[in-house]
Image (cartoon, rainbow, N blue to C red; front, side, top):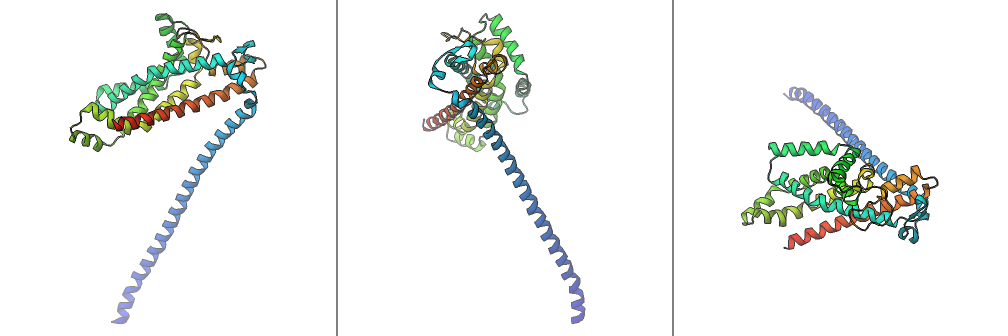
Length: 307
């Protein structure tokens, strides 16, 4: 009986051993595969950081020495080869103010409408989302021609800050709306159900719970929108103009900082160093606006929660 039992158990032990070896081998392969994926992700992240450091370092190396107080406070002279960028900086800030002041209410309202009052499969919501996706891929030069035809000629505003700012608002609306919509839709449904159980109205729930919870996504949408508006050149060429005098109203022409950099680098002999310095100011301005948008959204988030 014992030899028979031993002969019967041997194949079982052998099979178990093979299974254990295969399991250990598979686990080892899985560990190395995971390590390879993690290493690849770290490599990509480090490559992105390296490119960013390289670009910023190159700008600072060529342009930081040109940045002085006079450069920031004096108007351009000799087509930008001398003087500073004061009027260009003021014109850029005015254009961005018009852009955000007109795009943010429309974008926020449309995003809330799509996320809260229309389901994903609703025909109206699908039509609006498809239109936004198409508009997001339209070249900026097309928006510039539209702004020139509608704001400049049809409405009679010509080359002005108002025409340029509203044109940029049309450009950033697709990105702004879609980012805010996704952040509002990502708010847990249990939060809405809890507000309804407490007797809060739909508006109170949206204002005091949903929007504060979606504040990080709203801030991200604002950052993307500000970045695209600051970097835009082609659309402003047709709408805002290229005047370097100090603007006195929204109907005056103004040169944006990005367009000023283009003119210095491409069409102005001897303006490359000034172009680098203007690019440094543009990067710093973008960081300041993005940081300000983040701080504003966080303060609004805390205030809405307290109310």
